[in-house]
Image (cartoon, one colour):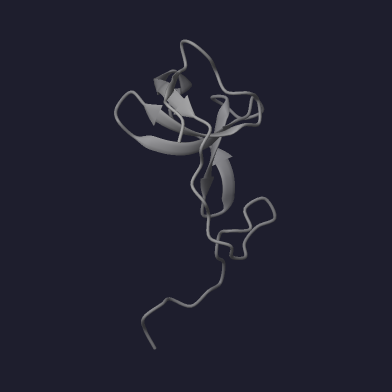
Length: 90
């Protein structure tokens, strides 16, 4: 795993998926995408969405990302489950 990179020193490339650390302590997996408001997008249950935070709060990042489970979902987020019954119940 690589070290955290300060956004003041270097920004991720356009389209690069990263693990980001925000100034208030949250860690998020996001993609730099100038087509989205704020310049980033993140995964939600329906695929990619606009990130709803001020992009200046991203203070550090690293190129490693978390593995996603392989499941079915929308074309741009095939790891997200859709129309699956809840687990653990009858």
